[in-house]
Length: 320
Image 1: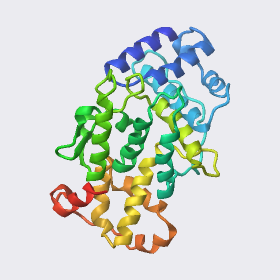
Image 2 (image 1 turned 90 degrees about the vertical axis):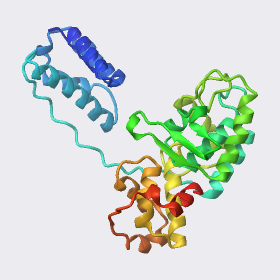
Image 3 (image 1 turned 120 degrees about the horizontal axis):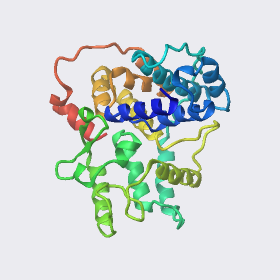
Image 4 (image 1 turned 30 degrees about the vertical axis):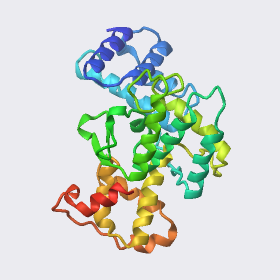
């Protein structure tokens, strides 16, 4: 089997399985261009290592390419198409010192005010769209991609809830929203109706098309500069940090109010679409240091009753 045939058949199999393979295919194709269209079984570990070390990249990217190539060769070796290849030693994983940014409430206010001054003609997003994007992210704790994928039909103002869809259909969730967010969305939908939408998506560009992640990030970067929201780090505050800010602000408010976090954290985890309680507990370490003694009192408890059946808890979540 030639290298080219191996890539083609492997890609067909992955797409048939419904697995996104664009980036992985580009990594394997890059190795193919590096070694040429030789027999797949003739590719050596030394060639793979020379390919991986041939250009500057982060350790994380290096490891990602490594695992893609390892899976590719293991796939064909398991089917007897090539001899088993011993991959070169893997680079150790980098220690991650990066922490998400937690916006303060004054910073959030400055960002929202800055949307009124973010009026450059070349910007793809209108000011009302950028404002609603920030409010939705902070008001729901959803991921940026989840908010950008919202359709108009996913917003039910009469029932005061939003259906947040995930790539995994089993993880779609219906979350309640408060009166303030409902009013913001109502005003935005009236404004949106005066435009020429070319998509059923809730958030659209000035041209009426769905907003892409890169477009949202670029618009937010300018907005952050106008609002003068920065930090002394290589990675500046990002749009995706709104999710972390949502969680930390809610946990901080609960601690101030003396709320039982053992009761609230499981609900917060489901509300945000996180997998497992541990995904929410990581935000505990980002709360202000003065609350550490309160957090040390936490202990896991089993919940026999589903949190959605707790009327008081649902009302509390609706007013987050």
